[in-house]
Length: 417
Image (cartoon, rainbow, N blue to C red; front, side):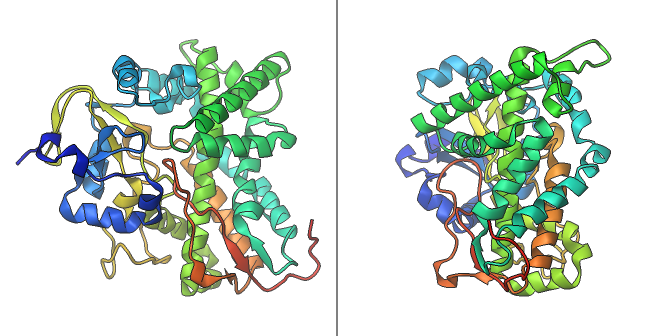
């Protein structure tokens, strides 16, 4: 049986992405999965679209040949409907995240050298040094908000050093990127413009005076066909590397720590077996994905997806957080149960198919090192006020805690700055 939006009154369609929905995301997604793996929903900007919530259908949708990542062919219709999509002029355009083959293939090839396993592994000593430095600043206090003290600044420091962004601008970039990843609003657009303006100026500076960093190498890179990144592609790539490369890892770490704080027996298991932390990272990605929903895809033709009739021009979003809780799991077969020793954990938190996240190796490495450092140096870490629970980001496609207030055994000899 197939169906389309006319079978459900628009006023009764589920509303997703609202603060209330995001606060209770796992419960809301479970309710939707119990009914069907795909739903017609109302998005935060008021538009209608399809939302995929099942794991197997998520894999299908993320690699479907009739779902395009490029909004440009639909720009006129999108603007007429009042829907805010980040197009080329926004600074999010001109990058591999919003491109289809053959452009996607070319852009990914030009950037991929910076994210090979060898290139990423070479960053491990510096990531560990930075992780210890941030812990040094609060380890003797016996309490901290880990979002402001650790999970926020560490990924920003790593991506800024990789790209060649001066340390004194990290706080600005963190503010702009968090707002840029939120729901469409005047503040989001202003933050994206500020991020755009700064990175455009930084690229010009590096064009005049190249340094040993990724942005300088992207300016100079050529492939075997003597292709290179245009100015628009350079800016779009820089924006997406800062925004996605930072915010995803912030929330991967935040979600993992929230899960460990809610399940202290799991934290103890990792302290006893730290060699299991890389596998545990996969379980954290499955259990609570740092990107709640994928960027929008656009149907280039009419087709059926999970029994739903998707018309040409319809938008499709994949709920990555929901898919993780629907993924096949071993042992007791309960995907709602956290098991850091589960192996392997299956998920689509980094996507699937040709758009699989190019920065996944770096995110995994950062999470592995950061969790090992925290679990080693902050014994008996616990919620400061357990009854309050977690306050989740209220808007945008990402999922993560706003704060992580914890207490722990103070570490003697550390400096509080």
